[in-house]
Length: 306
Image 1 (cartoon, rainbow, N blue to C red):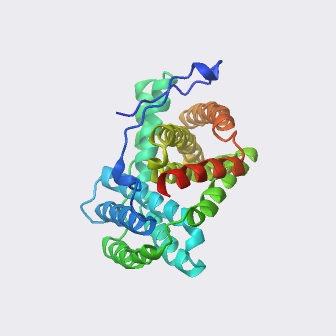
Image 2: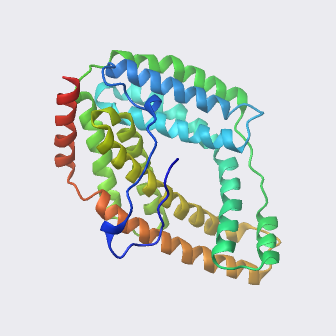
Image 3: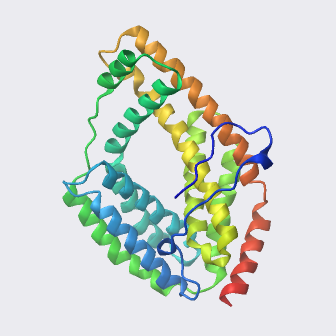
């Protein structure tokens, strides 16, 4: 099982317990597997997961897993960008993004409810007040059109076969990985408002998928780094949920003004607390310069896959 660390900023970073992330070989390249064939296998598996989230009978869990699968799908396309022509990348990225966007309303509705409950528990809000918060927001999310989304996913299944022709060389992966990491470092350096933290979160989640994909290069080390990105993405996700709640709060009707002010205050306070924790962890996770990181992983690749 995953081990979740406390979100409180540690006074001594070395005292933070190690991350334990279960190996998930199905989401990684196999040690001797050609790059193109491995990416096709991983992408098709995530498209199948996404399909379960766009059918009319999909539940909240299916929708959540579908969104995660589509994010992994897009991250791997970015990882292999050097081996794909620009039009090929867009034929893979654009439909996946559109399907994921169609699932956002359902995910956001569930996230708002869970965020309200977390805030109420953390700040000791009276149960009757928390109940009014939940009733005011409600859950009105719905899945994307099962027919249109399913058709888009089927088209992607055909397009993804083009990845089979990728050369099995580090030079196909290195530019995309370097770009993801460099953008992550730049996003961390430019943090300020909720939007900047959300953009940083996207890059962190891409990097989690990249390190997960490349885990066989050195499983213990890559698993630890993947886990670090996973934890940071989770923390940033919670900050985003609070920012989203604050964004939609002014449009919510039927909420007493005193309840609205209280919810705004605790959501803002908790968002800032979580962002502080994320910033601290990000300084450590992104301490390594991009060129150094690429050279290090390139050496692993040449040693393991030569």
